[in-house]
Length: 193
Image 1: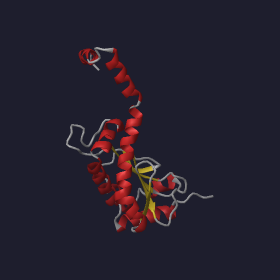
Image 2: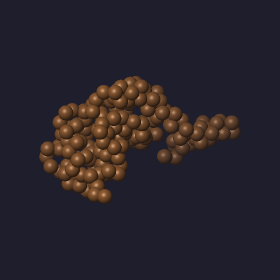
Image 3: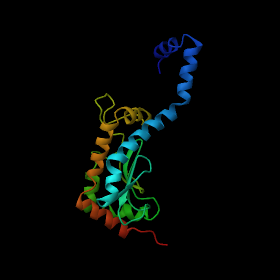
Image 4: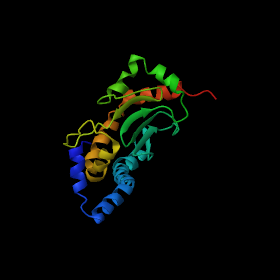
């Protein structure tokens, strides 16, 4: 922060009461964010998770904001996961050997999983594909929010719009082809006991 901006910020606190109010808000910043994320989580649950529990090939639960795995497989299998800043396909919840997964998905027939993402910001032995903070709300941060804190405001104040975008990302991974690839990964890459 440059000195001029810092001086302007300091002028906002011309009374101790204003400073104390600001300090109190900063102290509960995490709680406010948690409430906003919870609002998005509830919206997703009400719109999608309850419905998908009854139909479809994925079982969804609430770990983070969004968590889903194929029906008939454990919660420790390959999963779609979103929490705060990352939308990902994650393989290291416990049942799978991430190194086997990483080796298997190098084959071109698994490209459709990665191609379902708007972009891939990262991947590693645990994560087949990770898209970080790629949401749009008509702001200067669109598709590249600086952190989950800035994105949390939209979770609580543009909840429907946020939910629409997240659901669209998940739907791209619910094709018959990708479901079959998920099954192959789950069946081929189990950890040896």
